[in-house]
Image (cartoon, rainbow over all chains, first blue to last red; front, side, top):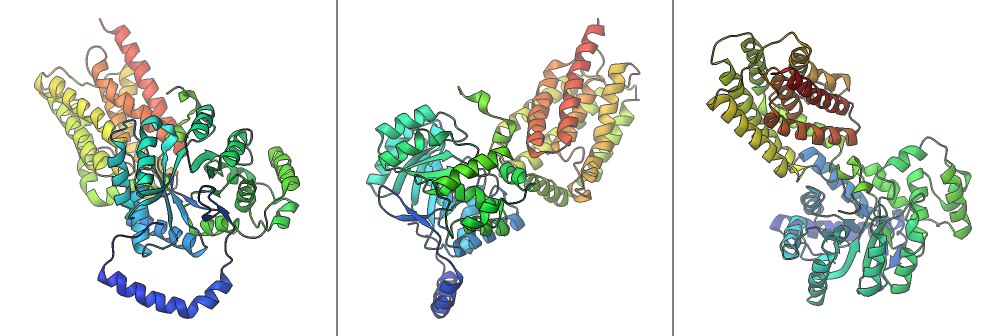
Length: 309
Length: 223
């Protein structure tokens, strides 16, 4: 778990006061919040909520103070709803410092599961980039480090495994997106002791169901799912149609929850990481981690119905 | 990269349209009233195009070089780089163009700009005037308001496209060396705007394509 490293006297006093208030309010808070559905990380058994928070595009707001505050508000709503996994990358522009800003504003919530990536074609440059990323987040160490889009994975994986052995990161993984280089992903999954793999999966992009998700289940590899809404286009497309009648059966109140519940109902999936810059949307997304999930029969019907839309 | 054909412009978009146009707005706010100065310099260029003095080309080249340097420093490096790590590489385009304008236009005096009534001249002059007076209106038509207008000499796209127009007004054949950096910037900017769903993408891309076609036509007519 990540530990905040920036603690000022003011934040310490604030944290003590907030802790006292929280202890008084806890029974009410517990009643208001439904604990999200979790899945264990196969390599450790540690449970993770099935919905996380991506930061691609949405958190790259530079030094815009107003937009930074909006991102911090999104993170606040995410943690209040029981979310833990936040995923970023050095490729995502200013997303990492914006996450760090949000974590500072929120007093570094203890539940954070920090997932980041190494993204450089140079193997020797990897450790410096990881250290810079860690500094941006303001965490003691990352929970998960992934090789972004398999870039120079032969060089970076040994570095990440060595860091894991030294206790400087807890889990190691690789990522790809939009169905690229799946053959290579499979080969790496089969030969390397990975904890995580990150892939694209949604109701219309189901290529990973054929080989990667079964392999992840067999090898005990946790699966993070990126682009669950195809960068928002799936939601925009679906929003033109009324919610199907079966949405109520799984407690889905909107299209975001329908699409996310489809993803996380696959038993090999550990966590989907939709990105958003709006509090209302993160609350909707986290709603997909509550209630029931579709069974196999309903999943087939979802595919059939949604492919026709 | 072997799977390069699976990528689209949207895969390279790092920021949202809202973030980008707020960046323009914050920049406009930070540099005000520099917009009046750069627009004034644009009007001065229009006046100089009618001037026959020997120093006309040197002054126009110098003004354009200063505007490119200012846009690169203040906007591309100071603002755009905060949301686009590729801005560090795009800065080289600006550096090369500034160097070429200073060398060819200011030091050697090889660039002589003049209004012409032929098709290439009308297109080049029209493109310059569009970037000076018309381009800011597209933000208004798109509902973004005055605060987010992109002004010649302040924002890169109208500045770079205006340069493409001006280069068509240079006496003699096409100046391909000076066109490379503006064309490359416009292709990148056009793809970015396309990925953002901004209608200005089609203006940037079609102006770029037409300016290249016009330069080729100009080359065929030149001795």
